[in-house]
Image (cartoon, rainbow, N blue to C red; front, side):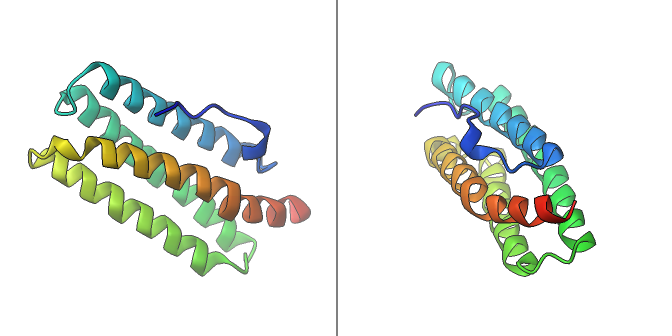
Length: 134
């Protein structure tokens, strides 16, 4: 699996959101790199995943606050996507903590696909909306 490199297509034109997305890509790439050289049961992988979950929660709070502040019309659907991501990621984290590291590849594939698709679709719509009014 390839690392996620920041490209213009990911740019939402909202600097705070774009910087946070880049940080999430950094976490993903660290996770991918660690999984490629270590066993998926490595404490390093669990540590990266925990940090990524914490930062993702922070990022989602940032987006949620912006959507609330500016009455974003797609707020409910966007928030549901965030909840789905957190539920799934927390389930992976729980599985790791319970001693099921064999899910590592599935987790990495899910994270990559979800982040790329969410940013290119859902977050782009949010960025377009916010860019017009901020």
